[in-house]
Image 1 (cartoon, rainbow, N blue to C red):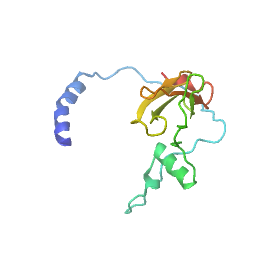
Image 2 (image 1 turned 45 degrees about the vertical axis):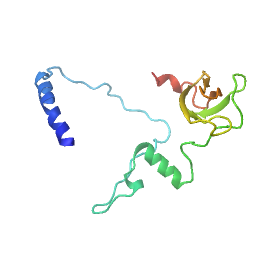
Image 3 (image 1 turned 135 degrees about the vertical axis):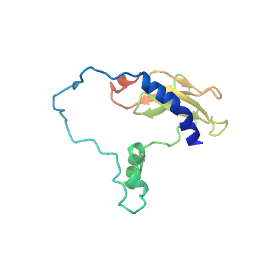
Image 4 (image 1 turned 90 degrees about the horizontal axis):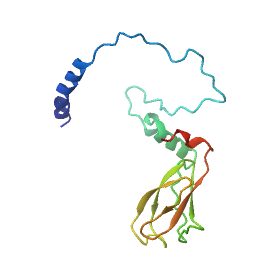
Length: 155
């Protein structure tokens, strides 16, 4: 199946390559200054890999967020908070259920009040905006705990 897909895409790739013209412009660097770093370097989220002739373990081959989660588990830290929200009451506009977040947006799932009274309904919750479950009407609010200007990179 994979080979069939590659074979089908090859003529289009060759045609696209023929249409591109080599650039005659010169390239230059964006910056020649040395990068200044304040504080300790960020942790490297790359595994060291396996020794030749061995099968790597999860911790040896994991990278990125998966490696961060595995390293946290080794130290007894739950990196991603997946604990359930307060479902002992229905959130209202005056007193919404607070959802802690270090980001300006978070996906949450509502199961109703009491818990599991309806199927899970997933929706986006954004900073400075209330969210409401369309099934039970419970209101949720993002409790933003991140840096104040951290949200400027979102588009």
